[in-house]
Length: 134
Image 1 (cartoon, one colour):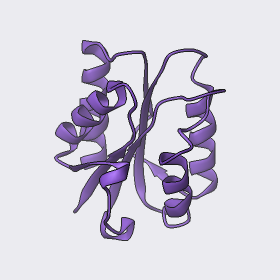
Image 2 (cartoon, rainbow, N blue to C red):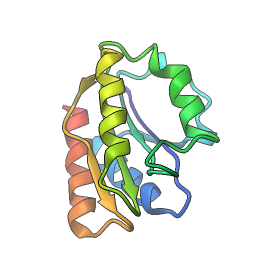
Image 3 (cartoon, rainbow, N blue to C red):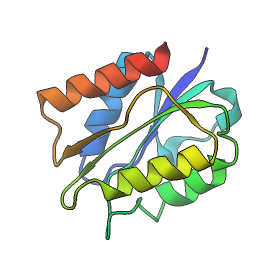
C-alpha cells in the first residue's frame, strides 16, 4: 500500500503537522509544489492546507491542485488537516463536505489547530497518520 501526505504551508504550521502525519502513516511527504506524481499511484492520501482569506483553501497552489485531483478521489481513503489563525474551522468543514460529495472515504476525523501546533496537535497528527495507514 502506498501513501502520501501532500500539503501547502505559508508559515510552517501546516508543514509541521504534515511531517507528523507522514511519520504516523509511514507515508511519502510532499509540499504541493513538489508533488509531480500521479495521485492514482497512491492508495491513501492525507491533504493539508491552512485556512486562508475568508476561511478557504490557499488559492494560488493548493486549491488548483486539489481541484485537479478531486475527481480521482472517489473511493480513495483520505485524511485532512490544517492550521488556522482566525475563525472557527469553517474552511475545514466545507472542505470535508466537498470531499464527501466527491466520494472520499475518511480514515479518521480531520485535525485542525489554531496557529502553531502544540504537543497535543502533533500527537493528533501522528494518530491521523496511523489511522490513514490502517
